[in-house]
Image (cartoon, rainbow, N blue to C red; front, side, top):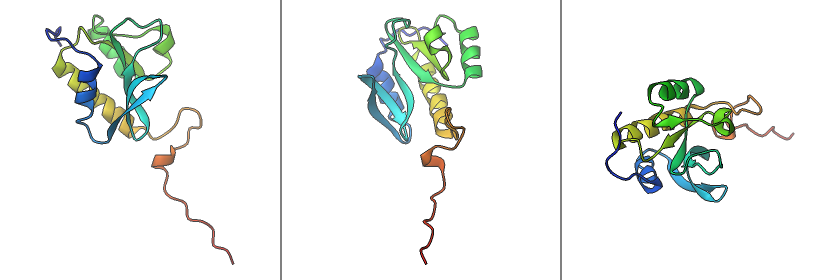
Amino acid sequence: MGISTKRTDFQVVRDMAKALPGVSGSSLHGVPSLKVSGRLLACLAIHKSAEPGSVVVRMGIEERAALIADYPDIYYVTDHYAKHPAVLVRLGRIDRASLRDLLGAAWRFVSSEKKTKKTGMRSREDRPLRKSPRRR
C-alpha cells in the first residue's frame, strides 16, 4: 500500500464501486453513499469524530483491525464507528489500486451478509419466498 500521488475524492470511490455488480448510488443522512441490494457499501464519513476527507467502508471487525494495525496512516476507527462493521479510510493517503481492492472486499462482505444485526434472521432479500396458504 502506498500513498497516493493523485487526489482521490468520493467521485473516484463512486466510479470504482459502480464497476462492481449491483452497486447503486444513494444517500445516507444527506450525504452520498453506495449500496448493494439496499445495504450500505460506503459513504462519506460525516460524524464529527471522523477526519475530513474520510469515507466509511463496510467490512468485518477482524479485517478492520488487521488493516489498522498494518496501515494506521490510511485506516482508522473512532469510538463512534467502532461498533459498526466498517473502517474509516483517509482518501488522501490511499492509492487507487488499494482503494479498488478495498471496495472489492467490501462488496464481498456486504453481498455475503445473511443475517441482520437486530433480529438474527435473514434479511428480506435473502429469504426464500413464502407461498401463501391455500384457502379452502
